[in-house]
Each structure stands twice: as structure tokens, then as C-alpha cells.
Image 1 (cartoon, helix red, strand yellow):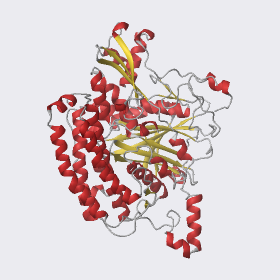
Image 2 (image 1 turned 90 degrees about the vertical axis):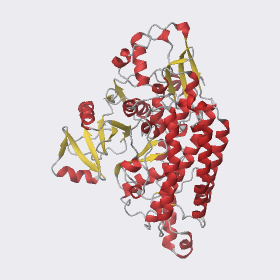
Image 3 (image 1 turned 120 degrees about the vertical axis):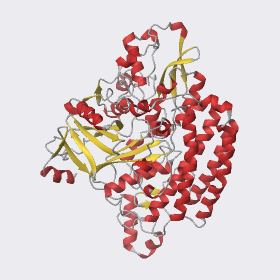
Image 4 (image 1 turned 45 degrees about the horizontal axis):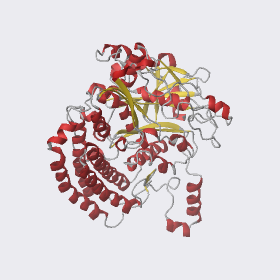
Length: 167
Length: 447
């Protein structure tokens, strides 16, 4: 992410009060967690009315990474890809989510289609989406222990878990 | 997080069940919230729907499971349906039966091996999966402009043929689900012709791992042009047969028209892409609107529907086969010569013959196949048009030879969330037609 450090030293471009960076020519918005929903709403009014993708990243093994201008890196990141059909543009939002308070607001009211993505992100990373109508596991069994895509999820020698078995 | 202590595992986590609850277990507020959740509406909107009877007598409704082992659920999709008589009141797709942790697996495979993993997600259009993964890796490497022309056009050829084979299989399964069993045989038969070509080119019928970062794995075999022309010559008459068999047939129309209708606004709110979005009249095709490869240089039409029903989705896929054939003809005309992969020794393994002569070639070969190539730090999202909609690949690289995070935005995963909306108020007999018209691939839904 060296290109991010370089752009941070120049004048910082802002959009809806958020730092705009570029990752390999793609427009990325670094959004603070408390402004997240309002920024997505403002972008939706601007034409980014389709939420294509929402996912998470666990940066446990990259604690010293540079996110961008004055943004402190946190362990988790929620990444949202928005699409504007009218201007044929994409924009990506990256939101830092700290480990000790692993919550973020749900986008359900703005983009109802993120419901499944948020459930998947919760399932895989344990990030809680506040205001989500049905935050349950989606891919793993409902009594599964742990969140598999976390970097500290122990791989290998995981006993096979069968629902309802007591062994 | 995980522990080997069985007692902790047995205690489990308590996020609650994934199932649809019966009405007696729900309060009115919870029912609205749940309807809102499965219909992707706000609670207030759900409450405004007058036809949701909160007081529906328990003995008149029944919750049944459709799947996960049902021949027409296209794999292991499980739907919980709440029925009143034959009418579907509520529906909830329950997925995850085919979850094999492919995104986690992807973090442990080098960029070289990653293709073998992603190709198994949407197993009906494997080449599109490989393509989006390769495009993302190439963008991270910064070599996307250096891919030889022949490789680019070969990728387009394979991608379009794959679209044809995938849609032919859709016609087969859609026919089978509606009751036109002979269509199943025809669809599989024609698809096999395309797969035979893939076998000749890639060595495998499915899961090719042929499109790789840097180009493709091998050049086209001799006689490939005749093989493609044979397929193109065969299909038009066969497609006309299908037209006679299905399109104009009253029974076929009765089964599909007006079934599982969805509006453009709903489809966009749900994030649905591909034929589902186009069936509502939104002309959105990434091949035309955000072109990748050389799609801007070929001529084709984006097929759109009008009513957003199962019939439109059928007709769109049917005609997309014809559009793909049009594109393939243009590709045949323009297929350039030259290299089929980038001549960058850090990314591309040396040709087999060089290994016998050159020590460096042997070292490069060994390094690339054991530790892979390193990809600069960064994160990138690339989306392309697969037969099912936008397939996207989000890769975070930490500078090593394996992705730090590899996420695939699977079109079926998103499209399947539109099922409750399409089924609501319909008949249980139409549920099969609706599932079929979404054309989900469960390997991709569950990953």
C-alpha cells in the first residue's frame, strides 16, 4: 500500500468528509465507522444506488499497514463495493472496525440486498452488524464455534462438528 | 478462536437458529421483522403490506422444507416455505450445505494454484471464475496492459463459449423443472458439444484451470477453428428446435409467464445482476457498460426483458446464446497470432523445452511451481459478467505469494436472496419454476 502513503502526503481529496484514495486506479473512500451509514446514504443519493458487495478482512497479521491519511489501522475492515449505473463508476468504502468493539451499523435500511452479505461477514469474521434484522450464521452451522475467516482461527485438527451430536 | 475442547464446541454459540419459525412462536413484531428480513424490506414497509396476516390461524398454515435433497433445487438448496393451502406465504432460503471454506482455502494457495480453487465455485462457468481471478491478480501485478493480444482474444472466446454452455444447461434444467423432460436431453447434448471443445483445448471438461494470471495455459490446438465453426453451425438449427418445442408453446408460456415477477427497483435494491436484472428492463451488462478484455471492439446486443418474470429470464438466456454466437464469429475473424501468455519470467513458467537447455529456466520453473510469484501489496476488486451476473473478485495482497484475503462476489449468492420476493403469494407448484429461472449454482452460493 505504498501508493497510499504517497497520496497522503499530497493534498487530501475529500468526499462527504472522508478521505479519498486510489488503489491501482480504483477509487477508495476511507470512512470512519460513525459516519458509515450516512456516507453510504449520501453516495446512494449521488447515484451509487447499488451495493454490489460487502465483505470483511481480518488484518491481524498486518498490524503496521498504512491505511491512509490519518486513519488508524484496526484489526478488522469492512469493505463495501458500490456501483453507479448512471455514471458507470465503482467506488469502494473501507471502514476500520476495532477488535475490542467489533460492531458496525447495518446497511439494511439503505441497501436491503446487503442482508446476506452482512450475515456472511458476521459468520466468517464475527463482526456484528447493529440493526440487522436477522443476524444469524448463514454458511456455517448455527452452533458452530468460532469465525473461520479470522486469521487466528485454528486451522487443521479441527474436530468435525456434527449438529446435535454429543461426542 | 477455535478450540479442541469438545465441551466448548457442544456449548456452541448462540446466534439463534437459521430456520423459519412457526407463527405461534412469533409475535406480530417479530413476524414483521422476519418478513422484512426475507423480503429485504424495512419493518415499517413490511407492516404496511396488508396481506401479511399476523393472525393467520396456525392450523391453516404449514411450514414445509423443500430440499436440501430435492432434484429441482439445483444442488443442495433448502427452502423453508410457509404455505396456506397451495399459496406460499413466506419463504426463506437456507444455504451453507455445500460450504467448503473456499475463501479460506484460497488464502493458503499461491496465485499460481488459486485458479484450481476458484474454478470449482461456479462449476457451470469455470472459465469465467478463472478469468475474474486472473484479471484481479494481473491488476495487482500491474501487468494487465501487457497481456498478449492472442491471450486476450482466447479468453474472450472461451468466456463466450462458456456462456453458451452454461445457458444451454439452463435450458435443459429449466425444461426438466417445468416438465419438458425431452429438453433436458437436448440441452445436455448441445452443452456436451461445447464441453468437448473445452476438453480438446484445456484437457478437461470442467474445472479447467486454463486461464491463469499472465495469459492462458496453452495455445489453441490445431483444428480449433473448425471445431468452433462446427459448434456454431450446429446450434442455430437446434435453437430453432427449442423454439418450436418451448417458446411458442401454450403450456410453456402458462407455466412461466407472470411467475416469479420482480420489479427493477426491487432487483436493484437486492443487488441482483445478470439475467434477473435484465429481465426487469434494466439494460445492464458489464461487457458493454464497463468493458473488460476487448468487448468494446465486438458488436452484440444486450438482451432485456420487460416483465421481470420467469419467462423473460428464460427468453433472455435463450437469446444470449445467439448473441454469444455472434461474438464468437467476430472473435474467429479477429483472433490474432502471437504469444498466448506474457513473457515475464517471474510470472510465466518457461516452456518445457527450455528446461532441458537452461539452468535459469529450470530454476524459474521450480520457483514458480513451489513458492509461486510474489504480488505487490495492495487491494483490488474486479468484476466481470458471468452467465449469472456480476462475478467479482476482491483480493488483498500482503506482498507474499499467497493472497492475504480472497473474496469472490458470487452472483448466485446474491441472486438467490431474491427468491422470497419472487415466490411470495405464488403457488408452491411455481416455486420450482422460480428456482429454476434464477439458475443458481450452489457451489458458488456456498463457496
